[in-house]
Image (cartoon, rainbow, N blue to C red; front, side):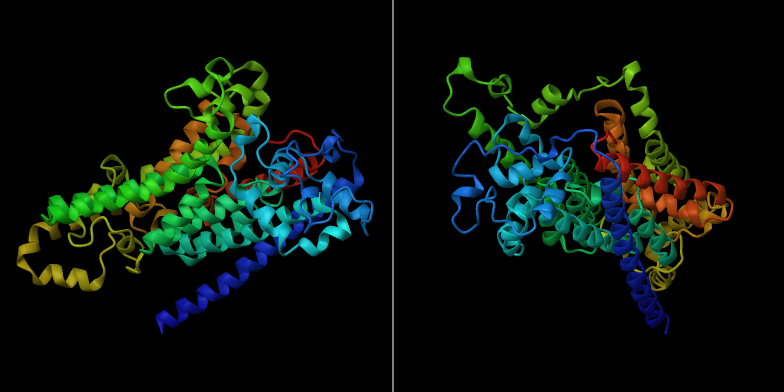
Length: 510
């Protein structure tokens, strides 16, 4: 009966979440259309689209698709409206989808989104070309793709949250908060946030459930959507390290430990491979065949990474380079998301300081046979804080050889129980080690955003980090944190309103 009730709850939550996901995208798109129709854009250059530099990549050279400059367009007004909505970085993605990589700075934008837009515009939406024009179809492809990807990203966030937190209500609130996250404008525009969120969160969900190969494939694709997708290697390395430790030091199986290390290394290489392949592609296009005196500076380096050079040369990205008095407004703009991220990190560290200080190796005393396995950490273990099921607890009592380990587990239980005095903590049923890699990943992202990036980008840079929404969900659902819960909702609403107003009319916004 309990299993049936849990399944029904999950299905109900899934339907509710999908409704919120669709409603949130409809809301953002409606606001975009409203502000575009009421206000005049600050910059009217969005409609400018010079011919492709290479005739072979130009849409006019493809006989299967009508000339984008053809006057025989049935609804030119609609096509013009869609083209005018292509602003900021969306211009780069659409240009790459139409003409390929023409300029050095365009290599800062990774190829997965332009490739998907290109494929959709040439297949599913190809019949729309005579009606609104080719560039408008490219833009429409981007909008359709990203809004659908967002809905699936919200679905996978709920499933991942449910697996890790073991609390359906907290998981649902976290996913609904994601639906209305402050970077919503970018998830409904032609940006790579939606694809990255879908692939990274979906990949982590499958990885935590033991589908390692499928998870590696999705995580590798996330690295071809955004550069920070490469950081997913940290999750692979974290669990490979724990599995190798459990195999070698606990179960005394050196061969198993070696297999785990080799498998982890291969999966890590698969994730990094697409990123490095894109860098090699840029090197071949820009550097190969040129004499040394005509080569770009980055081509001559021992490790010629195009991406880091572009970020530094064209956007001024670098360690502490953004620490200027004139950038104070941007720091203020990013302060809410950075504060929320910092509070979430502190919250989880204070809950389980021993786990964080030991990088999760305290779990070795809880379960000797399953230590280091993500699937053990996300399976249904009941509402026990230590993660021991009733069957495992019974086995501990029956086997005298495990007496020392049982005492250690009880000690850990008591230690955690002493830290669980608040109502919010009492509701937590997850295994601490399951959350640890997520918090470590978020910590690195926060440090990078604050010290080395354009800090205002933090709002969308951190918007796909699950711990943010897990922590916010606890705050919103906590009676003692009611005021802060209202503040979180007000923050999300304000940034959706301002983002749709400013961004869609070509005004600066994160």
